[in-house]
Image 1 (cartoon, one colour):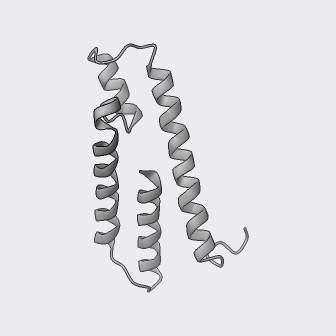
Image 2: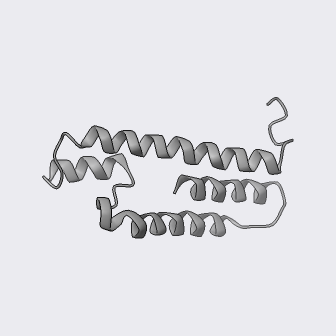
Length: 101
């Protein structure tokens, strides 16, 4: 999900620097990425795509508190992998964006 969202933010940055794309495309891509993530994992895990969702489900009694750290670890690990992937793909396409790297 974060790879799609990060990629959409890269699209917005490209728009800022005068290339193709609009802010709406970035928003639409982020929303569609979230929708796809919910559809894919909703039946398996209850769509725990956010630590706040996991906390709310645990407070309401939907899952046991023992599972909460496992879900949180998976969510943060997936977020870092997705953000790193989007960063790597964007820098590879535009290496002069961050000249000090």
